[in-house]
Image (cartoon, one colour):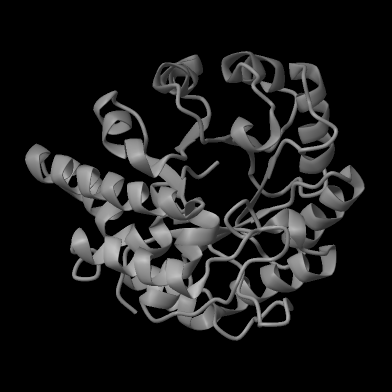
Length: 305
């Protein structure tokens, strides 16, 4: 299978004031991401509030992203759901409309507590799109599936024909690297934490990644990889440290899904509010967010429309 090289963005889902999905900004959204060096999108995941969308909304979003994306821009569709039948249907739909790949995180309910349970779950979903690469999205902070990923690779190896690898969004750099080294790099290990891109490069790995702060800081995160490849270590360090400063700011405002989405408005691409039960930012919080970003000179360095 083709390996992902470079950074894939996890986009937010645009909403109208009444909470309905707004498909209109997606063309401008895709253009902005391409301009700032992103290689594709991983839609309907955690940043996109995927579990709070109906199956119909998720399918329409997939269709729209594929419609507006230029040739070579990878559209990967997150199809995870608490209902595996829905996941299978979403996977089948993604294949039928020409998505590049699919992925799924473990469901928040029922909580998966055994590797074999996770393999069965992924097996059922991946079979819905046998022609597409399937990525498991490891983000245990969201679903409590704190399972050993090396053991998961051993269990899934040879069992799911279209299994491509893992989007690894967890803190263990050791486990990430061990998975990367599994059978001489058999599977595509996508780095999933924007705050540690440089360490993952230094360990000899990460060719590709999927991030959420790439929505508004992708130009700097792509810059880390470019600087590393050019042997400009000090520049790569500066860009990584700046990117961590940006993450420090959004942590003051309920993280990327809430605070990060409001940054999109501040840089000129208003994607609306978050769906219930997320606590949306107040106008006063938005002013404080803007001030904190100005203090680190974010707006001079952020993604450009």
